[in-house]
Image (cartoon, rainbow, N blue to C red; front, top):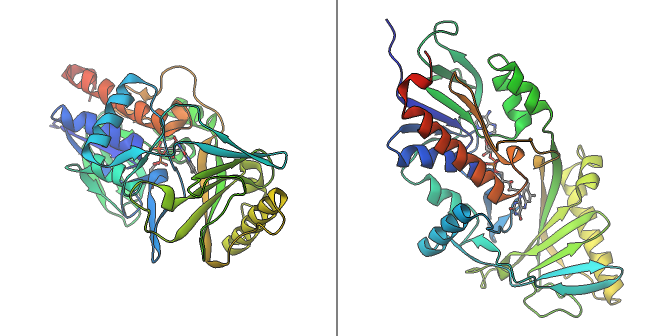
Length: 353
Ligand SMILES: Cc1cc2nc3c(=O)[nH]c(=O)nc-3n(C[C@H](O)[C@H](O)[C@H](O)COP(=O)(O)OP(=O)(O)OC[C@H]3O[C@@H](n4cnc5c(N)ncnc54)[C@H](O)[C@@H]3O)c2cc1C
């Protein structure tokens, strides 16, 4: 005799998994979130260096959808997000130009990870737990899902398992149980991106720009974006820490290179770009540097139709690849999955055991 479990698992504590888990928890369901990293955040995490906090992944977000706008307003009220930046600078054809489109952008405060930590508050989070396989009790007609982690521990049973992971990472976990969804995951590759960082001895000047310029975008070359973290709200007293995000094609060509070589080349590219604006206007001395490789940075394709998937056996998928490549998309995908699960769970016959 088996009984139907009443707990739910979410694998992945990025913004999508947390949005899904929150929707479940706020409707009174028991939910456990698993993440292989030491804390929540995923691509929205922040890194604490000796010198201060930096983001090597997402830097800012916009809010167009009314539901996400309401969520962002709540984060601003809670003090974990604030508007930033006022304007972007763009370097093209040897000129830097200022662009202000009037559409507000936000960032986490005092760091991006404040947003995901806020979302994770009150949830049961099993960090540093990489899930390596899923099993259904009773050979497919049992009473729930069990998760195995890389240390050989088993978790569950759970009535539903939501995989809030980049599709290439979800594919292997889901393939034995939902081959159709696994094949959908294969259509959703993720592009790689190198992110270098540096601590500079002096403020980074952009010829022609105000002293507090926050962000510089590039139209060509190995660099895509340079970000100055001390221009983010609440970090004015920090030293000059910058992140250099690389172009995706360049990143993929350099995927297996050593982080130090990548950091050196991206800093050299920034130096050369600054010198095209004004000779001798290069980089201040670099005091420390490093680089991080995101193997799964940005969807190379987005799924058609709904922004999540949910099977009758309680397996589900969400995350940025199911809707679009931004934080707003990932949150909406996870939130909508959470709502869909709550709706199904309101009719207990809906997940056959
Ligand atoms: C360099 C970079 C810059 C970006 N810039 C921006 C930006 O400025 N604005 C914007 O809107 N978006 C930006 N994005 C995109 C944005 O960060 C993502 O769209 C969004 O954060 C994705 O959230 P997610 O929850 O879908 O996935 P993720 O954040 O990737 O979360 C997935 C989680 O699953 C965990 N995980 C994976 N496998 C397992 C496993 N087997 N077991 C347990 N846990 C597992 C991971 O540790 C991770 O925490 C950027 C992304 C990158 C990489």
